[in-house]
Length: 70
Image (cartoon, rainbow, N blue to C red; front, side, top):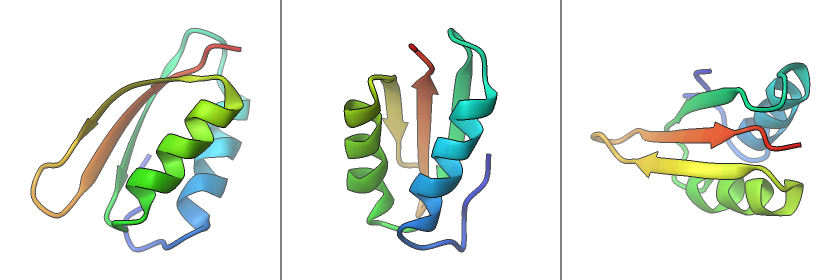
């Protein structure tokens, strides 16, 4: 899911909606360009009980890989 050009709280909101649509065990990849997304999405993943598999920083973008756990 590409959330580039969106700023807080939109990336977290869109992540939440997409995760609700997914089955347990599925993996979501998110690409964001808002620097605040690193903290915001990481915090949301921890609070929601899912698993943050990785955060990569290619160039100016942030790439999150999240596994739906529940």
